[in-house]
Image (tube, helix red, strand yellow):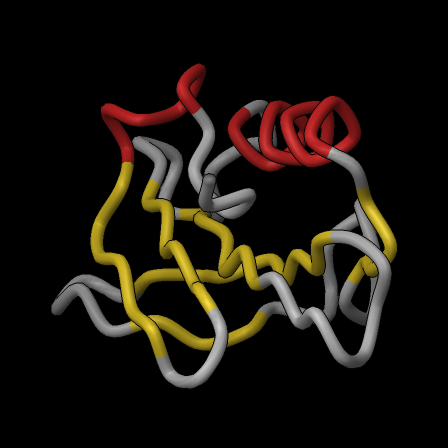
Length: 94
């Protein structure tokens, strides 16, 4: 089972990758999103980075949100969904 996949947020999946580790990119209506990665050899858990999508659909990690100024690691599935909900609830920039 891919721990980067959230059933609750499946409608917002932008892409899924396997770069030696599973990654799911989520894009939310507020312009934010998340990169959810499972590094088996680094963390015992799931890592999330907050993303910002520009008007062309390109994304970059956003280190300036109230959620975190870094990535969040060591999460379980319930914590993953809690962080995804916090990102989903962020107010849109501009």
